Length: 134
Image 1 (spheres, rainbow, N blue to C red):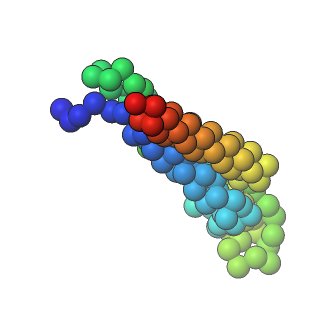
Image 2 (cartoon, rainbow, N blue to C red; image 1 turned 60 degrees about the horizontal axis):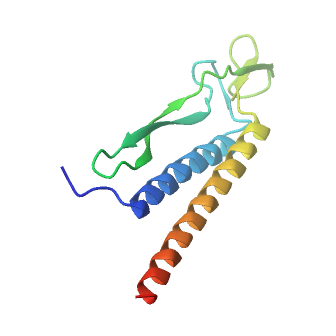
């Protein structure tokens, strides 16, 4: 087993997890409104699944992205017989992406990322103050 996890590694893992969360939401926004010729082919929003990792040597807990999976959001059928992807009934299937939900995901992940940066800067400053006081 490697060296015990330190605070900076915990913060880095949290920042990485928030970046995955933000990138998934950005991808979902980019695919909002896309259409497909069948429900099975319609874009489904991506959601990261987080897992906790406990370092028994240091007692610190961190997070990692266990996987990124497609949400169970239903595609939306829209009747558009003139669309080139329309099926035999004249329907196309739009992605089930809710733009408001994705914007909230981006805002929350950005806030969490910023909180982690502030925690890291505080820890760094405390270490520097400790070194200077000796």
